[in-house]
Image (cartoon, rainbow, N blue to C red; front, side):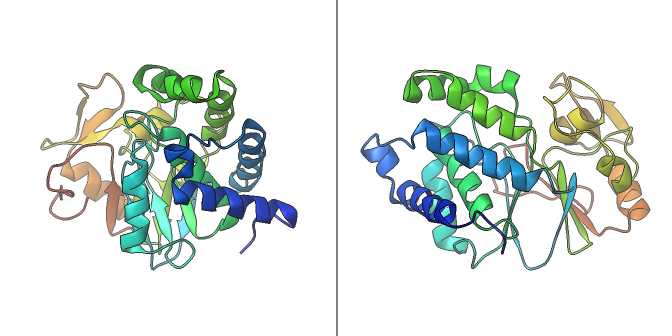
Length: 264
């Protein structure tokens, strides 16, 4: 598995160990800015070579929104397996809402640098400069570091996250949903992803859209993206020779929920 080399690898291991131990929270022992800067630089160098639609082999564990709930992330690894023993796809929204967005994103980023082929990080609608200034990540960075520098490093890194993943050539993973302007995976691959998510258009739709009990497409109450029916899911799966879609973006009290007769 390709990762950081030499002393860089040892430093990544040290960052992972510090984060997993919880000392960064319990002892207010934050990861130094210089280490965050180096980590983000290494992560960008790895992710820039990834596809907009990253291919992922089976078996793999697929994870929904984390939203800064660091201890839930640690428990997830304890229950489902540690990286690199278990492969993961995280479907975005690593930050905001929870109190430990910094630690959550840095741990996922460090694992990505250390084990690039074992963990895939998809961009959610909260991996955005604009959204994080409203829902907590910006304020958390400012409170913990006394400046916006770490926030800027992280949000610049958001731009390199992939937009989707395809597991075993069968299952599409995306944060939000589909887009009326995207009929094929190839059209997603052709998007320019290294940018702040636009307010509208296909990249925006992938992060903001939701399934609904309708036919065709509808206007989303979120003010971004669309809602789409089961017929749209079936058309997209058929056109791209896929079996199912996995997405996150919405809270469901059951933990998971099927739409479109077990297709999404």
